[in-house]
Length: 462
Ligand code: FUL
Image (cartoon, rainbow, N blue to C red):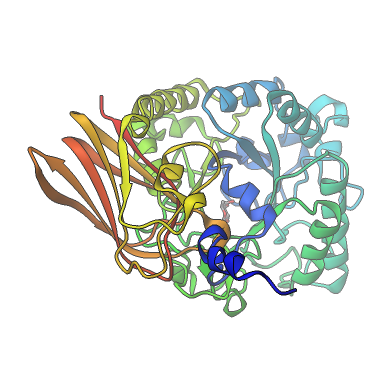
């Protein structure tokens, strides 16, 4: 079709800029909004005090007499979490649901006379409390007799079919990359394409996590944070689960071929499984806040393990820490200042992409002009404020672009640089530590193309 000249002249500024590099899929975009959610390690290890069960534990050990998944979900909801991922099967092979494909399950335990099903109770509680339901499944199985043979791959796919077919919507499937020997001393060659195929068929909206994606990657540490430089992009095909190059996962690859953002996992206690002896290792609200700033606030998500205890409940000490952390977060983000600011950008692509978009919740974003090589956005206020956290977000649907940026604050007519940073991506949080200022300026020194900023916000410090 031939466009009239006038329409052609308008196009470059009224349409979004071309996307750059690898882009997120719709399921990844939905996942990016989840931000902070719970991991629950639970199973025979909870009762034996081990981290890695041998698979030889008697099924009777599993007997959480007062199990109450509604209590877990209430705690997590009150804590501001958005979902729960449960260890449906850890390395010991014990299934928290009565799988037809194993004889090492809740059905063989004493709990509820063998009639219980943790996944059924948890998925129902998640629905009731409006939390996402996710499952961790370890392909490594130290109990299953067929482990180490082709038959096991079929067994694992059948188990996945049960877990993903019977309990409603699943937001994330977590594949542990650990791969050791099974009961007969053999290692397994995993059928990853087959496993992924089952997830895609039964839960097309779920993201798949492993050391190597395909959708979400491990961040390369179990300490709960990413790196200040964190790309959502990765040369995914160069990785396999359990890969020795895991250090590269912390930063990702600037020009990676695929969108595979980082998930930052850590336990609230020393171990992944609950032990009363580790009650005194529960992280403080301040320590959790610090990790949140460096995970959710560094282009990752924060997956915090809060293990259920032998009663089948979340312990009081963990609850206290979670709620203390929630209070700190509420306080830090209580008073957004951008809505009262005058917002000016060095350039604007066109009327649809005004700078003000980045300070309002319209879903729109600011785009700098093509020719602007060092775009800036400036917020000024009629009077000074104590600025605590600054939040930035790119419009990631068009790719992660910013490579280097500077933050300055103005006090008594003088601008002073307070941060020189690299990446932003889905979300970047910076703690300016109560700096007194009546202006905030961000300069994008280097980006892969026009800057597409979905959010700039400054929060009053308390
Ligand atoms: C690791 C496992 O070996 C740990 O037991 C734990 O489940 C952690 C989250 O992943 O690979």
